[in-house]
Amino acid sequence: MERKPGHRAQGTGVSKPTRPRPRPATTSEIVTAPEIRASKGTRRLVMVTAVDEPSARLADLAGVDIVLVGDSLGMAALGRPDTLSVTLDEMIHHTHAAAAGARRALLVADMPFGSYQASVADAVRSACRLIAQGSARAVKLEGPRCDETAAITAAGIPVVGHLGLTPQAVHRLGGYRVQGRGVEEALRVVEQARALERAGAFLLVLEAIPAPLAAAVTRRVGIPTIGIGAGPACDGQVLVLADLLGLSDAPAPRFVRRYADLGRVIREAIEAYAADVRAGRYPAPEETYPSPPGLAAALAKHLGDD
Ligand code: KIV
Image 1 (cartoon, helix red, strand yellow):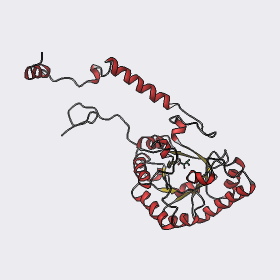
Image 2 (cartoon, helix red, strand yellow):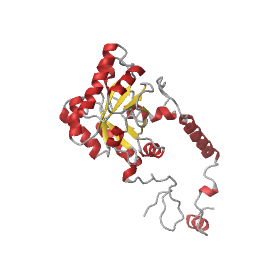
Image 3 (cartoon, helix red, strand yellow):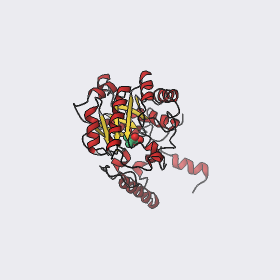
Image 4 (spheres, rainbow, N blue to C red):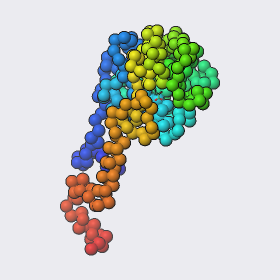
């Protein structure tokens, strides 16, 4: 059997991968959509995005309530300029990877552009694929999509709404702008939030709206709100992990707080590795498998080396 370095076969002395396994989650530890809905007013919720197993596992181990496989995947991991070209297949692929890491946190997958806009039937089909093939435990749709929310909920799938700045509508909105600044528009957002709650949404993301509007929505709905650029009055907050960790080199929006500069840490680590390889410092003897006695001499003999 061919063995890859870093994978142990019995008795070879080849070390196991050192990465810790996700801690096992018992049923009572697992965060569910009904539990999130019922948490309104009792605690602040923490949501973060993840796009693969390592990022979801680390977020899960850090104790977040909700891991969102957002379509910000396009910018965070796929090198795209916006979210519009992210496909349902890509979302399923990344959600399935993140599901392996999110053992306890509630895993929510974004429904990407084009997967729910054409019809309610499309919306239900796309949501079912994210659950069945991606192993998501809830889905998120942008905009006041009440019919779609009701139909997906009726199919047994918990739905997260998303109001305010909805990046999939960037062209209609004329850019990534703060929404709900005028009174009429702000009142419309409040109405949309209430309509989404009535349609069955169990959670609502509010993106890039003035803090008093987010506070008004939060007071007027019975489901928790999660803010991103919506001030402190929401029931919880979400950040894109690449922004939080300092992995992105694009200018960060005003609401982003960087908790680490991993971009610098990673680049410096790779530079150090490259310098070691070029100078012959890597691998050292302790990083090299020892030769069985006589092998070097036998090879030299058979191959005619000096
Ligand atoms: O795609 C995403 O990351 C999101 C968050 C900004 C809420 O929708």
